[in-house]
Length: 252
Length: 318
Image (cartoon, rainbow over all chains, first blue to last red; front, side, top):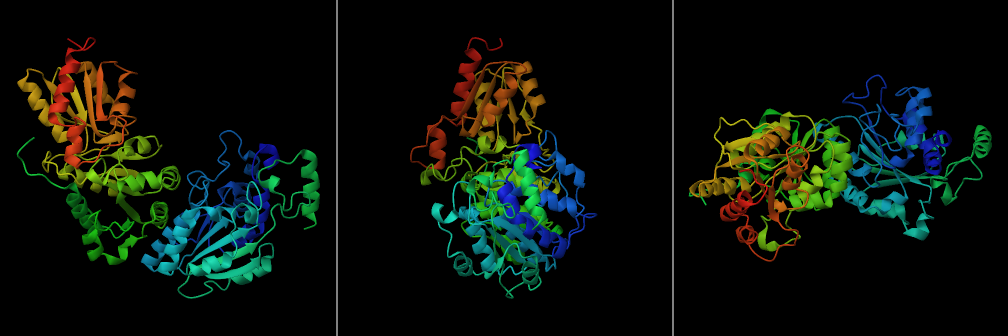
């Protein structure tokens, strides 16, 4: 997709893919036949630049045709570089600017709380994205209101566009920060499907608290020449690099 | 100005919100510690679980509103207009307008209603900011009845809207039989020499100016352009064609607001001389709300002067 489009955010796509796959195939109560079902679980991709990974997951889950993935970022494609809920079924809100997903997720969770509804809200954020203050406004509100049907998953790949997060503006001690805002926190290997699933099956981790899952991931996961290299935030592989990457991913 | 009693339109807003809340449990209110200033205390008292106060956090305020809409609610997101639009503009653009979330943004105490609190609290850029955003309706009602109807219509019309309300006293302009329509200007007075186009708190002043002009032998049409987007192009083109000159009046900077919107239509259809009255691209000096309007000539006299000067200018229709 990214090679065809000549554009995209492959590093973050690969760090989030295992989380997305686990959510969509093992956790979320969503139905591609009824994407507007009021009782559906909500999933919000706050790191909207990883739309490529979301579209791939939605396609495999039946929300959009698999062969449509070839149109990623092509003129007039539904599959814009950042997701558009008015065009793509299964997308809950339009993201792209960072720090927008969690406030919207908190609003959805408050809506469910008002109704005493059973559905849950999941928000996937990047880690560098947590430098946006809006996340902490939302985290404070969620903690205050005890939104225990809300889960945020932090894709902790430790890189942002320009550099490592910790040499840009430090995020650690990240778990303590979430705890201080009233959240129950767990840390997990974000590429270990079984471990992720085990955590998701135990939600909420604490009654009366929102949950934060810090998923430790590798940017560019599964491709040796991309892993943990900041330049692969939005670099586009050559055809040759694509062939090597696909070969390596086959073995993962 | 007129002798009629003045009304704070926040009361009409708050009364209608209560009515809506009674008839539809999807109606919720989102506040940023602004229950008092947005006059949503009565709603909180009646529906405590349907008032969400997110604290002093405007980005979160608008995002939470979008999330509530996603959950099937009809959120009225209420805040001082300066903070709502200035602080959370990207959320308004992405989470509300671009996402087409069914959110009702209510900017309270817009314009210079906060008076001597100063330019940080004035909201004289909000038309320019909001009307530049696609898929966002922008409405500034002129009196209590129009406020009531705009709020009612907002709740019953799916999609994003920004309601720009004031706290400044305004006289009643409309009776109960008036029917506010989104995107339709209302002709408050017909005239043939020029048209005054105003909205919000300036409408009553425009009407008073038309009285003064009549005494000077000038016949002024007065249009209330409550909806700044989508704009009533037909009413503007008709005004240009039939009266030959247009004065716009707004409690807003002259850059990119109502006057700019009208001018965009006029220059591309029936170019006629115009004057754009508003705050002339400066931060206001210290002074109360009424004093500031006078300072900037946003009074019946100020409008009259501009109108007379315009009708005498070369290029104005004879």
